[in-house]
Image (tube, helix red, strand yellow):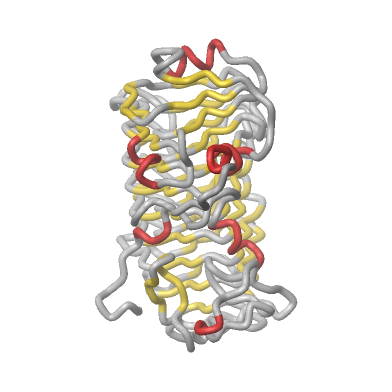
Length: 392
């Protein structure tokens, strides 16, 4: 995919800033101009500062925010090309970035590629959250990380101190692996919760549970997210939640998740699971198991009991602005919860009434979230491939 186009305006220089964290006043520490390393810039930063990283590859691991309310960001989170060229590489030594000092959403990681993480004694190859850390991670490319000694190849919410609740938005989490659960993202026993919004979780693998997302003991909230082509060895090629409080999935597209595991979405041992306005198609069969789930206004291959549910080929299509969109005439168009609308108006030629939500990741109020403030196009979604006919 090409990088986003941006408006020709005198405010152009502010757009990446807005995409990461909105308006704020702060000092700027640049890497490598002001500090040779990212960790050195973080150590020198004070609350409210911005660490801006120029394109390049930085061989650093266990990059620690140290509890600071700062943003660590690339120069342009609107551009996929810039994000992919601004690389923090853990060099197969440890986690790449760690949050373990009670950080909250004022600690922001934005617009970077996080790769090469390979911790031996814990999870979180790309990003490790522990000790009630609840950062915001946005517009990042979290790829090719491996948790050899734990869970969560891409991101792990650890099980040591509890209380963590990271928010992950508009990130591509791909080609990661976990030793046990959560190839892409994992939440361990009593580790806290995780929330994903407008993310692409694809081609991740867990040796046992939850190729894309694996949760044991707490909760997961997945909204307007694509879970595609993930795999697991035992249960839940896409998502597995066990011994947990709840799973809530809304306006998600779950497709192409296969492998040796049973079920694309696996629920077990007392989980309160609610799925609404989702498309769950072309996965390992049966797609949902083992325990019952509350499913509504969703397209589930093979069918599933619940209000507004259907079983129909969704007719995915690739357009310039993205993949896994719905082709005009898809049974999933205008088939979501009638009390909800799509977040933006579709063009007239699309024959889609925005006043009633579509099913899937590009329907509902959250579809605006695919395009961050200050940008005109989504960054990662169009990379997803389709078959030559442009449909499934």
